[in-house]
Length: 139
Image 1 (cartoon, rainbow, N blue to C red):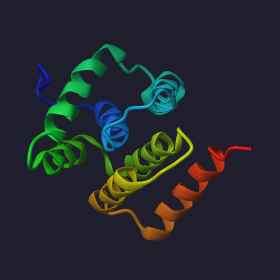
Image 2 (spheres, one colour; image 1 turned 60 degrees about the vertical axis):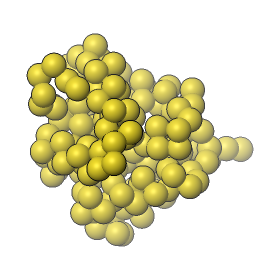
Image 3 (cartoon, one colour; image 1 turned 45 degrees about the horizontal axis):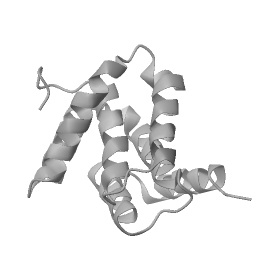
Image 4 (cartoon, rainbow, N blue to C red; image 1 turned 60 degrees about the horizontal axis):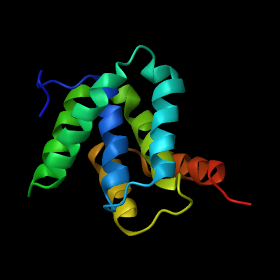
């Protein structure tokens, strides 16, 4: 796991993006680029130490291999993430899922889990999903 067992809010956001990308067991280049762009450009990641990403990735992958690992991951994320960033977390997750132009199967289920675990209002979640779909619409 992490050397200092606690996650920052930024770690939690990164972990969610990684979990969405890994949910279908195929991390695509477009998803990696989307995560990298978010971490390098969004205000919520200002000052984030990207050197933590390999540790965060390992933690996510290790947890996803365990029987109750997803529940454990969501517990860590809820502990680290202020509620005011729940919609931001969901928006980042939707953008990563949509980055390759399709959201199907395991990614859909992961987004449903995130929505439920973060107790997001269904209408707010639908608006976030619609915005993500619009941003990633091919010609």
